[in-house]
Length: 358
Image (cartoon, rainbow, N blue to C red; front, side):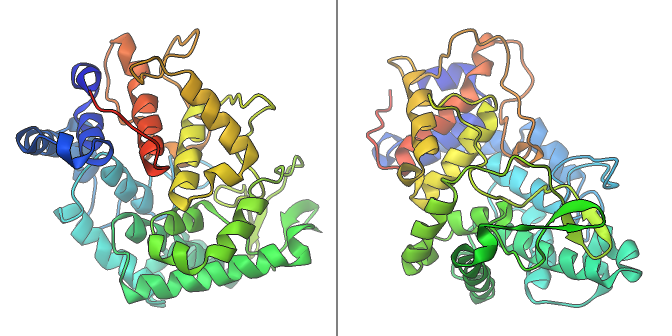
């Protein structure tokens, strides 16, 4: 903690003290000061200022980042909402209250065309696209609301049970072994397939009560996420449209080698944290191996200190943008290490490992 207080952003300092340090080590005055600093932190206030009165960011719901191909000029509502949570903002702030109205409407299966947001216009001529967009939007809303702590809301729990049941049927089916077919000259995900996606994984990771209720499903999920991901290129068909698989997860997405080395460290800690929250990180061999390797790269003070670290780790996966980095602009070499050091400490705490705070 003493190192983080010198080197890290207010968001990392606050979350480390609030979520990793044991209650006995949390100085109330420092915690209150850091909470105020987080609310004034420029990267967070910049996100909040872009929100519209309708609760929407960027005129869209599902954009993890700007994409010319998808018509996304900036990250959309779900990911900006999640970004503020990761930056340590309390979920009672006005930005969350505005967005919650929209997100709960999505859960309610409201058929208002306006709720299609970025897909409203193309869905007029393509009902299949609209059906896909509503389903994905509902899962995205469930993930955001679960992350925000609405864990006992019956609307969220109802959607969560339905999503888990659909995934469970998929994992038990023959489609899980052969999930592709040909359409329009492309290899596409079978429309009958309901595999895990990033939203269903995030949702379940923050619903511990459902994890206890669906323990058998978690075992099947761990086995599925241990299988190699497909090497062939494939797309998702939504009505008449074809999209890159932004959200879907087939097998192990980590991409670790036999020694647990990964090219994308930000995605690795993101994925490992989700598996730790699900309680299955030890059941996924490559994940367990990668985590052990990352832990081994920490010095005796718990600071992640890999060899030949020349800059802040970057991810090629757009899903990680809301999560990493929490560190702001700066020139200190230590800022290359703060995010990963915090995440590894948090993962250790989530796994029940001994974490000493100094």
